[in-house]
Image 1 (cartoon, rainbow, N blue to C red):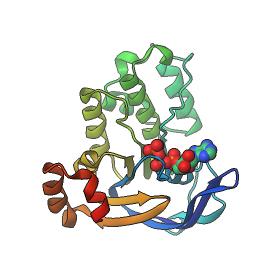
Image 2 (cartoon, rainbow, N blue to C red):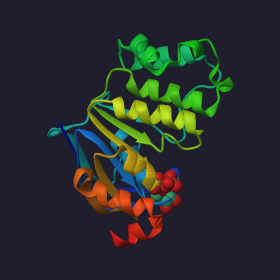
Image 3 (cartoon, rainbow, N blue to C red):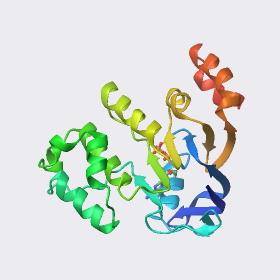
Length: 224
Ligand SMILES: Nc1ncnc2c1ncn2[C@@H]1O[C@H](COP(=O)(O)OP(=O)(O)OP(=O)(O)O)[C@@H](O)[C@H]1O
């Protein structure tokens, strides 16, 4: 399986943020690393189909993406705070025509939250529910936007374990090099809406880990 983004142009109200970006995602985890404002969220939103590109196409194995291909966890969240976890999950299961709701609930360990209104959940609990929704229908592609952001060490670690267990094409954004090193099979570095680097971590990982350990992280991006 391969997700191909070809000559993508995306903007907001006439301001172009991504200008002619081409990149391919293979099966496994690709981490998109970039500073604030580099276009990570915009790229994921285009892949998830929530923003319409001005130009370019995104294809999965040569065919246009269909609804249900992408499980998206947005940075902003998308749950109804007045509905219970169960009601939110059921709503999305119906929309996605998914039959794996129970399996996902158990896999993420959120059964104890089912009758709680989303508005009463902690950040970490809410993120687990958002990931559960993305997993409904077992999508071929995951687009996960800074999914550990704002979480404590415990929830962040749970999220990373789940990300590692996902099958298919998993695209995960972060601005933290440490997280990229932990999760990436492939690394994409994005700056100002352009790909600055795209590579296989099995080749690059050793060298980057040494640099990261020595605490020269900011310089690393300049080197690359
Ligand atoms: N809804 C919007 N309207 C106008 N401009 C936007 C909108 N969303 C993002 N932008 C602009 O697009 C650029 C890229 O933003 P984007 O959120 O994609 O970057 P990012 O790498 O995800 O950043 P962060 O790490 O802060 O989430 C920024 O200059 C931002 O100000």
